[in-house]
Structures are given as C-alpha cells and as structure tokens.
Length: 443
Image (cartoon, rainbow, N blue to C red):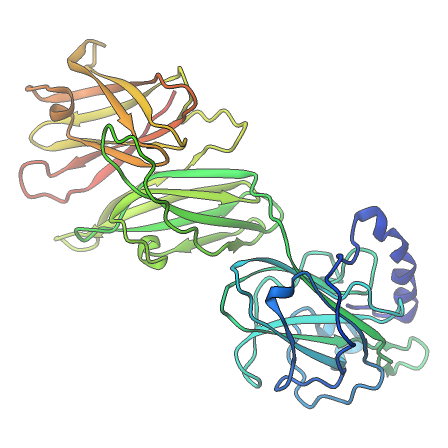
C-alpha cells in the first residue's frame, strides 16, 4: 500500500532489488498443490492448514477475479493516500481462513507475488462475514506504506494469534490515481502468493514482580509501559509459591498468550491473576519482553472506611547480562530498609528465586545502630519459586518491638539469583486499614 501517484509506484518497484539486502524473502515452504481459485469469497475462503506451516498458496491469478460486493475495512488503507480525500475500494479480493493450533507469533505476507507493480493490501479479522473485526497490530510503522515489506509493494504483517481462534484473511489489490487525468485506475491484479509461517521471537528482556495476590479480598493489577519507540511483545507467567527449604521445582503454570504494547505506550491488566485463570492465591510474576519495559503491580483491597488500600510493587529487571541493583547474584548482599514490627505494624519478607536450583540466603535483622537483633537466619528459597517469611519477630526470634530497622540478606549459593520485597503492614494487632508499603531488596 499505497502510492499517491503512478511514478511513486515505479520508484517503489525499483526498490525491490533491495530485498536481499534487508533479508525479506519468501520462506521456504512445503510443496503446495494446484493453485487455488481466485474467486474465493468471505463465505467460502481458501482454508490454510495449520499443520502444513510454513504454508504458501501460490499461482493465484487475481486478474480475472470478480468484484466482491463485501469489501472489508482494511486498517492500513486510508483516504490520505488518494487526492482530494477520494477513496477507491481495494479490488481483486482473495479470502483465506486460518485457525492456528498453537498460540504464537505468525507472519502473513504476499511476498513472491507478481508482477512487481502488483500492489497488495492485507487485512486480518475475527468474527463472521459482515461483522468482521480487524485484528490490532496489522499496520506497521513504515511511514506511508504501513503494511508493505521494505522495498516492495507486497504486504507483510507479524501478529500474535491465539490457538483455536478462526482468523479471516483478505488480500486486495490497490489501484493508483493517474496524475494526468485525475482518475483512479483500478488495479489489474496479478499472480498472488500468500505465505503464513510461525516466527521465532527473541525475548531479550526479563522482569520479575516478586509478589502478587488474589485472596482475602485482595486483588492485583498489572501495569506495563514500553520504553522504546517500537512495539513490544511480552509473555506473562505466574510462578508458584513454595516453603522455606523446598528442594524441588514446582510445576510451572502456563505462559499466557503473548500481549502487545505500542511504542511508548502503556497497558493496564486488572486482576491479572483472575484474568489469566491462575490457580495460585499468591506468588510472583515472570515477564519476558522483546523491548525494554517498566512493569509493576498494585495489590489492593476495599477499605472499611471507603475507597481502597494497597501498595505498589515495582518489577525488577533480571534480563540476562544485566547487573540489576535489585537482584542478588551469588555472593552479593542486599538490604531491606525501614522495616518495623510492634503493636501497630508487622513486616513480611518475600523472596523469589529466578534459578532452577534452590537458593540459600543468610539474613540478619539490625536495629538503628547496626546491632544484630535476635538470631541470624538461613533461608532456602525453592527453584523458580516465591517464598514468604511472615513477621520479623517470629522469623528472627525477637521479643521486643522492632522499629527503625533493616534486614541484611546475602546470597551464598552458586548459580542462583534472588529478588525480594518486604511489606510493612499496619493494623497488626487492632483493627486498622491493613494498608502497607513495599520495600525492595536493594544492594
């Protein structure tokens, strides 16, 4: 899509020689049968077999395709591409249907179509014919040609698609306004090739939110902000919780379908535990992303006095190769500050182990002068799991009130990394708001 004058189309055609340089080439595919008929309709589409990926429907001659009375809305095609706000509908439509077996990232493109000036436009939809809803993310960010592969008039989109959902794919042809007559020349069509393939996605960034909960009236919402000027795709996985000293890796819960957040944009996921149907009442959240993110959660409950109470917990960047100031690698020491336990407040410590081996931590409770209170402790955090130690006085065998204190934590296990958060909760003994604030474990 989309040339505003004919010579621009020629210019873009000449740019097709750059394909090899940018690596945009048709995928090798399994052998296809005879070319499907071009006269497919929304009600009788060409069915793409999800078991045959990578798939190619090639040799579809659209030059004789009849006019389709039900042209869908193509998200990447707008009036700005034609003079005086004019609009001409894409023509020479070919319809496909695809129901993936696996939730994953897929590339759908028309690379390999001919001739070079055959300008295609591609739409992906859910819903039935007549009520088609475009799938978000179809339009890329390539300037005025948002669904084109670089250097071509051919369309290419990369989307996360859900297993079991039927997607309708429409491929149309774009005409061009004649700069001399002012008339819009309809596309003559061409020989269409449609390719569908799963795409390997590199999740270079990893984040960990050490605690979230959905029990006793508490709910956790997830916040995600994209720090880069390109769309981000990310995966969410809920980590189980274990007990001090567990030596086995608990069964991992499923990774939720990939989510998208636009360049520089933000997303809010209300009740993230319930949203994804996780069974655990509390644990940690593991997030992998293609771009740099800021992530965090707010855990809240209704307050008896009206409104809500709760606390925000920031996610920790534990990306491979990144020296996080909030993740303790082997031999490193960190500290929780501002912890307290008396008649008005209590403190719970939460640790999450990001490795696949148990992680042993040594911990001390220190008062404002730096003196050790109670007994030093050693904790064993289960692999790839969250673990909580409730109440400072119970954890460190302290009888007196604890104020203006800190907890020193040292990771003494090779091959593991630990993230932690301390929750200082009011309303310890008497009825109160049970409000809290979150203290990160920092080096």
